[in-house]
Length: 553
Image 1 (spheres, one colour):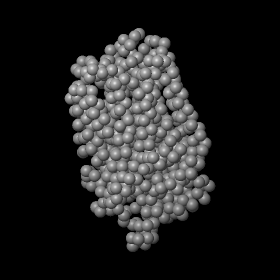
Image 2: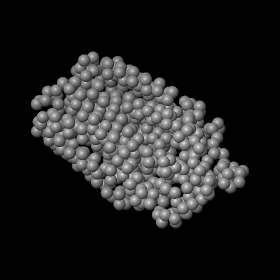
Image 3: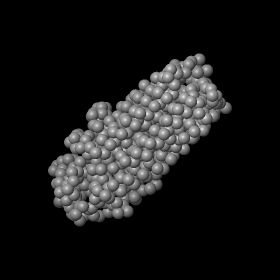
Image 4: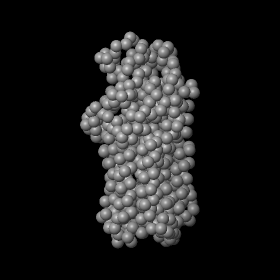
């Protein structure tokens, strides 16, 4: 629940609606005497405060600036690690190596990238999103220079490891930023935007790397990365204010009210909203009784707010940083016991591996007979995946939000996170078609056109859609720990990706393209079919975890 009802209000709403309200269940309409802040006749979840510096209240310019900077950071950090596919022949020659060893440049970076978020997410929770972006971009900048200058296999591998460590925020921080600045009904579209640009960066990397490797040398690709990362750092320095904003939980509100309240009932109580700050003091609307007519008043700063000077600081002060860091190290492991997070982890992991298959095998397949394509051509083929990703972007998010809103209206204005799950159905079908075309096309030596235009485009569509839908479902269910949810997801995804990179090419040499690609497709289908279980019993799973401490963080 992002509305932060106190117990009395919660029981009143449950009695009026005749429904059990548990974390993830949201009320998207006025109920009896309970009125909420709205925009375009739509109840806003979470309810914004009356603080002009609340990120939910920021005006369009600052929301656009924040999301643009976060998206650019995601793009430039994601572009490097998986851009090596068309450069593989040149790297084999440069470092006097072989195919399996050079592929490990990608595999090791993927593995390190996943676990690096045990560093970045605790830091973002304790000190803010802004310092994490600035620090990680600085390290990415250095790793790109190192890659451009590396002269030996070991040196280049060291740069890959550093790049993997630095690129971790590309997989975890932007979903937090989206939840910080956007309302529930808007998140589906922006979550799809995030996945489209993240996986889009993995698609664009090979498109650029192939021609640059052939015509200007593979090292210049990394100098291009240096320029892009440097420009993004400057954008974030001036255009990305801190979005982390502490919203009072009812337990905190009652504690403050009992200890510090000096005003009469119904009046606003002054509290600190930026954690650890003694500067920005604002009033909290959550303290007012929702049954009073005062709750119907619109937030005066909605769409008119702007960041404070403090939100442009290098970091946000935290009264208990070590406790916060230790909690964030433990919570991702705890979340693996939550069925919804496990479901999202498996759908994201195996959907991403469908794209990873193309990234790891495209040179092996298209550089060999009967195709004999050059790295330039293979790199350009990735445009098909990119176009597919764009199609996934413009369809999955709006479709997910539209289906959820329709089902919410049919459910008397009560939103359940499971209402997003039916959106997966068309994209599972697209995923199956794409894998069939690629596997049997390569195995039987089909013309490249159906393989690329149909198979690769389908891979792009599904990798932008399925992970976005599944992860948004998990975030809607466990919003207070959105960052930790993504750590759980990325650790699962990158462990599988690393293992996949170790055996996929060897398996193809031994048995052909059909067995490994079809096995992977069957696993994706299996995890997606588990969505039926969550459509039926998802709320029961949330009831099991309703008293967990993760909802109070």
